[in-house]
Length: 150
Image (cartoon, rainbow, N blue to C red; front, side):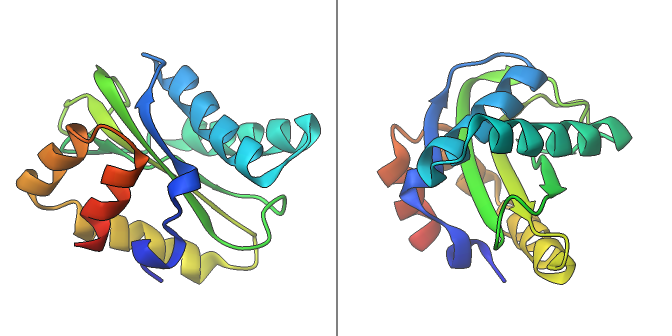
């Protein structure tokens, strides 16, 4: 599984409005809840799963990228939300760099391998500094999708 398998312009938000870790996570979960028509209870279940996973260790991976993720059976297949922030947000990345590019990855508990494959695909795709800068400068969801398609 790679990014293009799950990339959906309805699950891309540019710009993210929050400037703290909790706010960014909440905003990313709101994107999927709205796009998929999830109830308030389902929203809360997803948010709790992501925050619980985050409490085990930061999902900031460095180079300005964070990949908050969780397994939850609210989703029936692996889904990804992409968010770009105009403001760097501290996600406790190992390199100390604040994050501006965010990928929220959610997977049902029985799809662990697809979940891991997608996380690896994100990390590989974002190794290019030029690509990361282009994402940070994207003006809207269409531009983000176009960058991944190129």
